[in-house]
Image (cartoon, rainbow over the protein chains, first blue to last red):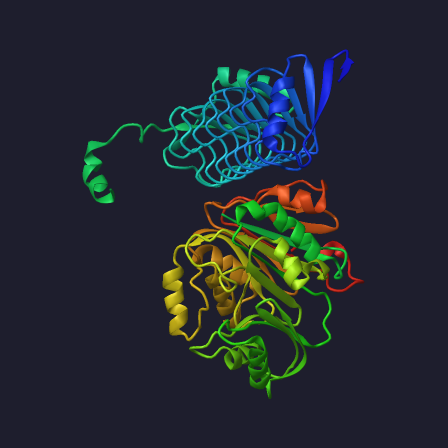
Length: 236
Length: 314
């Protein structure tokens, strides 16, 4: 362990070790004043899941599936890309992906922030229940599907079925939108939105796109429409 | 689940493709422990073709080999014949077409199967973990420009050599596919092709992808057109890789239901379900990227050793 002005730093080696052992070691070292550097992550799955305390974890390479899943307080920085389900089910904390993220990034997060400096594949922010997903690049098919709460910011282009069947999720898009999903409508950002966006862009050092469109639920799907009973009777 | 992997060298047509694919498949083996296989494309050709033929289990191999030789008389001159596991590798001076070879060897009611045929293609597969491919077929020594590989988790059809992947596009020389997912309109497509006289050798839905592509090529479409059309003509969940002597690429269903990442550097293109396979085989170079759904991409092999590498991206 080395000590510097910024606090202590310690190295955890992944290599061919069982990830369960690696995660136990990370959890035992987690401390608000310490940086844990994870060497040779090799895109192994499940690195840094269920970290339930503050502390900084830096992966020196790519992560496999579910990195930072169920995170509650830690800051995880991935110096590479991330596979499916990065930060899935996160409660609080921050997960930063320097490269691209696979499908279902930030799925079902309840809080905290996920920052992807590259692109996200399909279903980013699916079923989000809070928190922020900030994507500097493009986002794939069905981003924000069924988001119940929380904010997704896409600086680049969005794929088809954007913000489909949302509840109170909010999506901002800087680039082109291939197609809006069911019940997704565009409305004007508020002054409060602009303040929060400016804060997030500044804190994560991401340039704000010149234009940001805001997408919310049109609320047409929120309640059962009795006149559609016959349709559903046959559909189900 | 299944594991699929592909690799193309941009710098040489004489790379240790077998070793690279073996390392990638080992990294994916947990996705499919039932069987493994790979299709490697040799860079050059001396005009001979290579056929891999599965011998019937109810015949002794020496008799089966003699039958193969006898049936190829007039169609091809057999330059060499080696037995590997349940298959034989034949080097042929071919006078007929790939379809003629299939027709001569694969008689109804018998169990001979041409596993692959082509001037560049070496396609081997068997039950068990990827490591077994090295022991049975010596794949670690296979060299070439590109190739694709597969580790299988069987969900709906039996586990044997024939049902393993890659699949040769039966009857069309030098085309191979590997597939992760389920083709849900397989029964309908199979019925259509069987009415046209196509013989299916397995009950594995993945077999229909090669049949589909061969059918499209037979209708005069380019491979790129065929792959583009497949995005709408195939139904279900699929990420599949396809390779011919000149091209390698992927296609994904509209929902992007099965994972895929690509890593492209100045010297190679690699693709697999999981980045871990690419890192295990090739190290840390390049940024992994997952394409969205309803997309395909093909990369062209460098034309000759002297060619500019700029043509590697299609």
